[in-house]
Length: 234
Image (cartoon, rainbow, N blue to C red; front, top):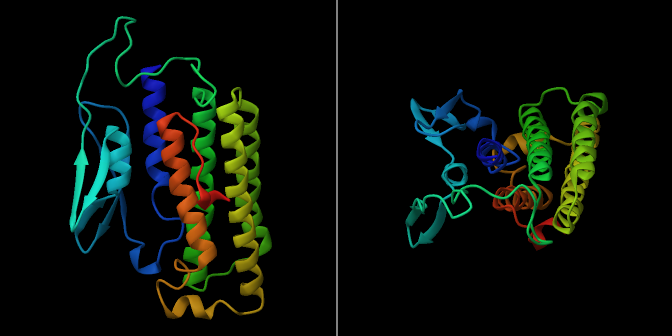
């Protein structure tokens, strides 16, 4: 169980990366392995330096972030050992204890869906910004995979928390789908040059921002194991 939940937390790291990425940031990717634990985090190399997503690292370590002026503070959890039931502080019970809890099976399926949406969005954004060929058939492959993973997450929902979270996952899928359809149409009408003029033009688009914010929220929610709501997903 501990290993299974660790995989869920590690999978959440990929979701905290932006949905859309500027072409200038497409550098060589590596993997950071944390010794003494299981799993890995994505690392990007830029100008000879390696950078790890701080929010992703926070998810892996189950820590917390807070901001103070120009300082970012990462607080790591302290070890509390095993409880009287033999369960450590990082483990969760197999079955939710209340309706807001997310089941392990749903958490895994939900993380997989968000990862698929993130791949769809970031790949499309890179193609648009670099004026690569984008067609409806090309986008459909990503859409179909995301739709399939959403069905799996819905089928894995067993609690009220799972079912409520499924509604948010569905809204995020629909947002990415509509955004993708819009870009494909703009590419067809040769109206995507505006995104190549500025590396931030596509990222700062209101629809893009909504997708990014909701994706980050969903990653954090799924990693926490508790259902919560957020306006960015509505």
